Image 1 (cartoon, helix red, strand yellow):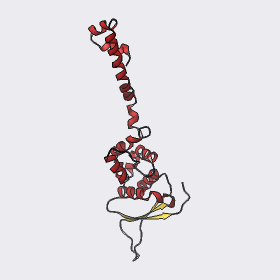
Image 2 (image 1 turned 90 degrees about the horizontal axis):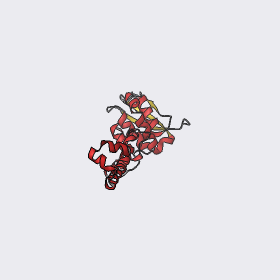
Image 3 (image 1 turned 135 degrees about the vertical axis):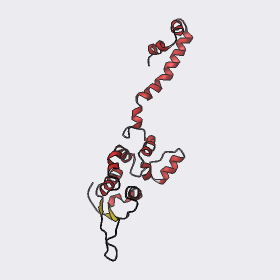
Image 4 (image 1 turned 180 degrees about the vertical axis):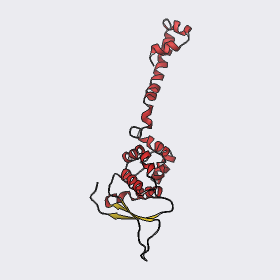
Amino acid sequence: MTETQIEKILPGVIQRSLATSPILQSILSVMLSMRNPIERELNTIEKNFDPLQCPEASLPFLSSWAGLERIFDPRSLEALNKNEYQQPIASGSGHLRELLRSTKELSQWRGTNKGLVIFLEMATGIKGYSIQENILDENGQIMSFHFNLSIPLEAQPLLDLIKRITESEKPAYVTYEITLIETHAR
């Protein structure tokens, strides 16, 4: 808002006195200076809700709206409870931003093999995950409601994150095991 725009919304008696009153001109100047930072923030407020543009410290807040705090590192949740910022997932904020941007797509596939693989690839930035079903037990019988998640060897440092994602994305009644595999896929 400009000085002229502020003048127009002031009462008539003040508008007439502005030209001759240095005190009123100073007050108008202060009003303008107080309003400018607020207007700048309001004019760019949408960036605070855009996962690709928001400040780093806003990511946990936006993630909670999308229900993604379920995959956060427990230490980062403790830090957030103390109003301290710590990287929410081990693979970095870039991957968290991508997950936030893709929540609609991911929610369509939640609870499926495809959804789990897509989620893991987005969260870690590593390709090559696969799921095998119809796993045989030690007696040669198919283990009902059980799968094997094969993860690339390069994803091993992110194993805790992978486990949290798998636990949150698989159906509750399903059990699983994780196997590390060597792959050159990226």
